[in-house]
Image (cartoon, rainbow, N blue to C red; front, top):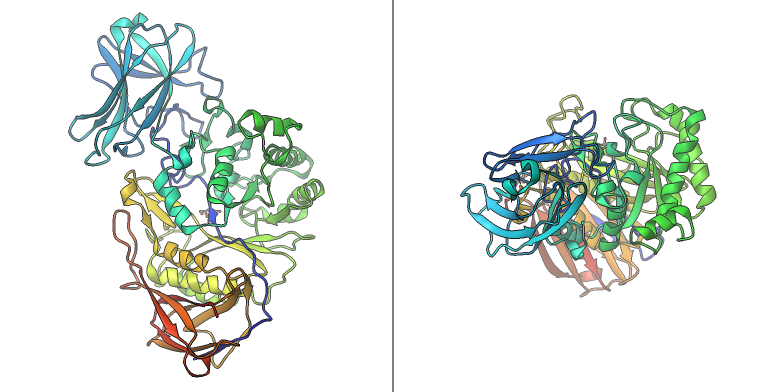
Length: 620
Ligand code: AHR
């Protein structure tokens, strides 16, 4: 095919383009990005998931029993564990299906109540061999009637042979009055990204940082909505000292500690230079319960309070609270999404008639610079509101949606807030009844996503940005696959998916403007977009080939670019349509960059194989 790219005349694209989406699912935060190594650290529970001793066992002959004491550690953490025994007593935690132990500093702490004049021992141990990998004595500061926090550090001398390791905390029960002590909020962190206390796991942040997402959509997803109105994600219960965070039942089958709360999300944005796209609760729960119009005000006010907490000066009520929690400088919020998938669960009519308008009016009145987004595009959007579109489907259906946004209005920007090829093409379309989804992104699915992304880039004046979803999955406990990045307790096993490589290529070659093209063919099997990076003045051509019976020869010209001009051509391929990047496995995506020169009349000649994704750049 022959493609000619004009010198000017396209549209400016948004800067956000490729971002990330986060919600508590798949233990992506708890037992994932949030670097806490202790599972069920504060015995948090709810009516959905009652408090339990999950992940804990007793040392030797000692016994563990959950207690709701009359003087708990805090009203947020009412349940603690009583450890009783006669000699050496204690408790052992198995971590989030293992604990990674290597020569680095681990920072731990635990709260104890009860009279004890002796030493505690905190140790990391191999559950495979019983070997102690690191151990430290902690002098008791215990008081009979108060909860006292004890801190410790552990520095193993060598890397453990696997992650089948535990943390134990023991004491001499014969020196404790009544032979028992009460424990709560037992915590252990490895070194975190940027060494933030209560911070993020380094390898996963590295995988994200390598990708360079420009925005973060959070905190959901369904998890924002909650199964019930009462079970919604409540921003004000995710801030402040950990002992003041009650946690909650996620919508994804487990209790969260809320250790990764609103402030941690913002710090994450700061650390990776991501624009926050803050989702606020919009009056719809997953069970279909909707807040009546007459009762909506308090939830609208709650969203305004959340915005004041994030952006208000220290002279405001919630700005002062943020300062008290260590952030006197306000953050900037430019995007707020109202709810999540409010077109589902019977929510659309109330959303369209009063729920979205109420949030939109209140937020734009107080914060005129904030771009408010609806959580769907299945409705008429008021004023300057944008919308959010989600797509989970079989690869073939991504191809048919390549031109989906060509005739879309540019008055209401669209966020592509959850995008993923999930099921194989042998299904007619996605089947939500069995959700027989692929465990990992697979190559043909990633190429199909690339085709859809090219369609979005062609319309990047209308598309605010795109993110894969869900983003992260702990392979030891997950509810939804595939995800952008997969992992287990061993940081060395973290897998950047085939889709990660596609997004990475497109993201690293950002076009500030599209450029008009003419060609002698129609889209399929070759799909492409062309444009310019105004920062570096380089011309960019991005393409994908899907379902071709042969290599596709391309003759490409850029207006004003002459013979002999050099261009870098990067082509991604994989051994098969079903190649996947598995946890603990090798990267199957092959990336080859060659420098080619324009021939007669400035033509760059190359060919692209079936199921390939390519970017050509030239600085002419
Ligand atoms: O990303 C997984 C789920 O898919 C999200 O929670 C929801 O928004 C969507 O249906």
